[in-house]
Amino acid sequence: MPRNYKGFGTIFYGRADEHADGSFATVEWFILLGLPVAPLRCFRIITDSRYTTLWSFGSHHYAIIERRPMAWSLVLKIYALAWGLLAWSLLIVARYDAIGSVVGPNYDFAVIFGLILAPFVVVLMPAWVRRGKK
Image 1 (cartoon, helix red, strand yellow):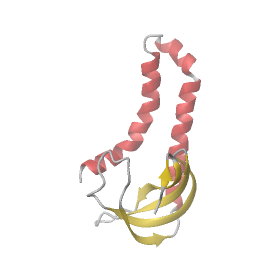
Image 2 (cartoon, rainbow, N blue to C red):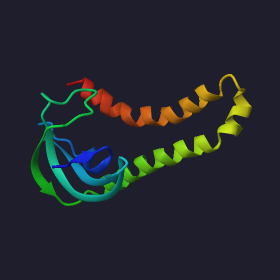
Image 3 (cartoon, helix red, strand yellow):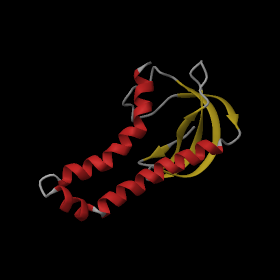
Image 4 (cartoon, helix red, strand yellow):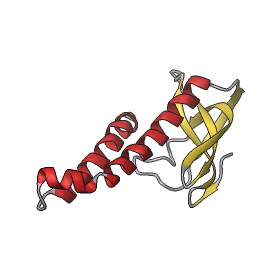
């Protein structure tokens, strides 16, 4: 089972090949600062909804159904999302002065915050909607 402390260790990232019983394929990752560094293995798991809520940032309870061959398409998707979001955020912060000069000094922080936050909301929205239906 994945274990991490303050963004260092292992974690399940990704969700693919969902079945009617609620199980899905996921990849266990080695993470540094919460960012996926190396995929370790792939499993089909099912979450225990008694312990998982919409805003559950603590421990999650899973039952591993089977070990699967590595889902490389899911690995690439996770790499692209995680590192792409980090690159986008760093680009916006690096271009802070240029953006501030376009929108004016009264709104620059709000625009910067919105530009950084918007992609995260778009990426996380499907998970929020899926959890809200349960």
